[in-house]
Structures are given as C-alpha cells and as structure tokens.
Length: 332
Image (cartoon, rainbow, N blue to C red; front, side):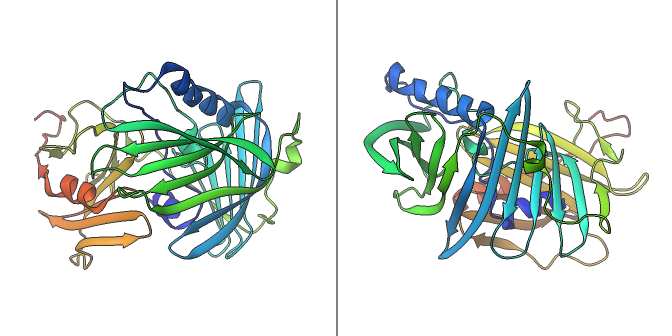
C-alpha cells in the first residue's frame, strides 16, 4: 500500500488511463490521440517539469528512454525531500531517503505523462468530448492545444499542449467541471536525444545502506473472477472495474482487497482492509488538491475510496459497497 500513498503525495503522478472523445469529433482530429500516446511511450526525451497544485509548486527531472521494445524512465525530485522513482517497463522502484528504503513492485504508478500513454480514439464514450483549441507556443516550441471536456460531474477534464514536431504533450492541465485548472504539469526544459546512456537512468542517491522491500512477496492472491468478499451494487456512469487484488494480511487471517475502477480516463481506487484492534478515526470525505477520498467502516473493515475525481464520484462508489461472504473455496 505504500506505493499507492506515495503516488498521491509525490508530485509525479496523474493517474493512468485512456483519453476519450465524443462520436461527433472528426476522425482527423481524434488521430492526435494515437500520435500522443505513441510519442509518450516510444520517444527518447528528457527535461525539467514543474507540478503545480493548490498554490504549491514542485520541480522534477524526467528521463525517458525507449530501446528495443523496453521502456525505462527516471523521475528525480528537484525540490523538497530528495527522492527518485525508476521504472523499467512495469517494474517500479521508489527510493525513499526519509525511510532509507527502496520499494520495488509491479504496479501501474508512472510519471506525469502517464495519463497520455494509452490514448486511443477507438475507446469512444459519451462521457468526454474533444475540442481543438488555437495553437500556442511553449518552451520555444509550437503546440496544438486539445481539450477533453467532461459530460457530467463524475469526472474532471484535461487540456493538453501537444508539441507539433514530436507529438509529445508539453503541458497537461487538470480541469474541474467548470473549466478551472486544478493541477498543472508542464515542461520548462525539454530535449529529444537520439540515444540516452544507461547512467542517465541510474539513481543519484547512494543506496548502499538502504533496505530493499519487495511489495509482491508471494502473499498476494491472483485476481479471480468472483473471488471477493465485496461487491459494488452500482458504479457512476461510464466507470468499470479494471483490476482487483486480494492480499492475505496473515496466514489464514483476514484479507485486504484493492479494486481499481476507470471510465477510460479517470481512475478510482477502493481499498478494503481489516480494522485491527482499534476502529479507524478517519471517516467521511477528505481532499488533497484534486484528490478526493471517502472513508467509512463496514462490518469489521475500513473502506477508503480515492482518486483524482470529484467528491461525488468517490462517495458514490463507497456508499454502494456491500459485503458478500465467500466460502473457503472462493465460491459464493
């Protein structure tokens, strides 16, 4: 679970997903989504980015390399606590100097451009519309500006500055339902080297005295159809379950379950774990920038639903959670 919390408070991540557009969008306009996704995944690029939210601003360095089908990325905080996140395809390594730990996991935690990494005009829903805005210039590069606007109050929108030469998104604004910017990630320096050396993808911190922690140590049960102690009676329009994990807290003891929902762009996590000896004090709605979380108790479990979505979305999901006992064989 540490990796999930890290993604929330460390200014690297806008949650992963697919960019969608309404059927009324012209095909030639929608093609830009495919080009952006390809650029984010397969270009070599490096630079400095700023992340702004709630009046705060952070700076980070990003290095991304694609070679022989292998995608690697290094993110280094330039302000605040020194820390780094390394990614090698799906394996994510988080370096935490304050704890002197290195966390390694197979997890969908990626960099600030990850929202753009799986764009597909084939994923059409009525929940977003695409609008082509006037061209603008950013970091001395010509950009096509694209807006993805939500059709209801269960999701945020995006505005994207796409580099015309490379198709890489150079700025991404997260928008509330009224079009106001909630968060912003933007390149202040960027270049596109033909090749990136291995040393540029190695951590700058001396790790010789750090403790390695591998999150998936054999205690996670593979997701199985129907294997869950819980069900969601209803989801907000457009949202679907995209992943489910069951993890034993102790041998033959209670389990923790993690659900991930997505409408194709926005993502929401639901984490359900045993209360322990003392009831949880965290109840109801909380907010950190664009991130909303809704917590409650159900039976002897603590439920937390969170995501970069409006408050109504996390509340909707949490309030429709229902316990559903499962037999030892996993059959209801």
